[in-house]
Amino acid sequence: MTAPARTTTAPGATPLLRVVATGLGVFRITMWAWATTLVIVERDALIRSTPAWSLLAAAGMLSFWLLWAARRRIAAALAPAAVVAELLVGGLILAADPNVMERDTIHTFGSAWPVTGTLAAGLVRGPAAGGLAGLWLTIARAVGAGVDPSVVGFLSALASGSLFVLTGIAGGWMFRRLQESEDAIAEAKVRESLARELHDGVLQTLAVIQRRSGDPELVGLARDQEKDLRALVGLTGAAATDQSPSEILKRHADRAAMRWDVDLQWAVVVPPELSAESAELVGGALGEIVNNAGKHGGASRATVFVDESDTGIQIEVADDGAGFDPAATTERGLTRSVRRPVAEAGGTVSIDSTPGRGTTVVLTVPSTTSDPVPGGPS
Picture 1 (tube, rainbow, N blue to C red):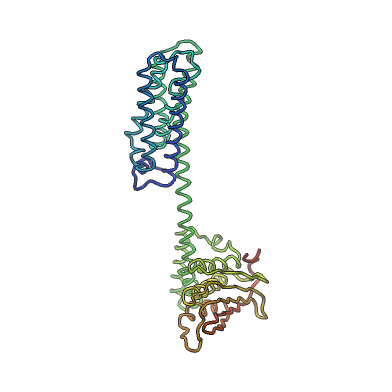
Picture 2: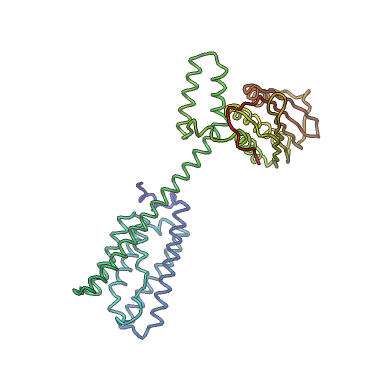
């Protein structure tokens, strides 16, 4: 990924970026408070109090400002200038350590506060920048402490330097992986949403064209378009049929129920044995029935009853909506959205409705054993 530029602009700030920047801000203030507390406890060990308190004050003001910016102005909190300022203060604290406090204290001046600069660099500019920030802190510490040629001195410098560098690299690497995961999840959600929309409309229409048309050229064009659309959303043949017929029916009906806030109840006596294609056709019709109940009938509750019939599977949908007079109502819309797809699946539709007493729609569809059915809607 080439994300450094996008992480420094507020309009493109993702929720993940804000959470990580805020978490880093809280960690930064915690480390500053701990370092300040230790200095207060061992204030008698201060050699030069004015530089020490000045550096701690600078670190404190920067910490609080960066936390505020992470919540209010994310671009400012992650701007290169902010990272450079933090690394500069952190380097000065490390360089000042042996010069402002006695060496026999139980802690280092500034504690772990300077390490947050390497994390910020890794967050904004990636693992390489985090590693370079760690190297800068290593040099600052070496300059302040001087060069100790002994084995102990070398190992101490190597340990602290490795900590700084690896912290920056690891922080940058982990955030990049989180970004990639967030992008992958967002893309998957978009694909899933698009796939469902296609299933409910375009792909279903293309399937009907392929079955009904007697024009070989039109059938071939519809088949090619279907393949292209499935490839576009990552919906392969296996992925398109990995749901059971019950799950397909439930998906269509539940989506319509959620859209119109209809309390949809399921009563499945026998799970439907339908091919994937028939389940999609019947599911689309079922979704349209629930949609009509909520949109036109004002129904607040509906029940889907699934059972065997003499000719296959019977699906009954009863709602508590306003109802209508079938004799006085044109069925043009029902023919296109309900009767036609059910007929394509080899089934029939019957409607019983009375004004003020709701509507009951019964779908009767031939069953097939071509697709095993693991279970029904719950």
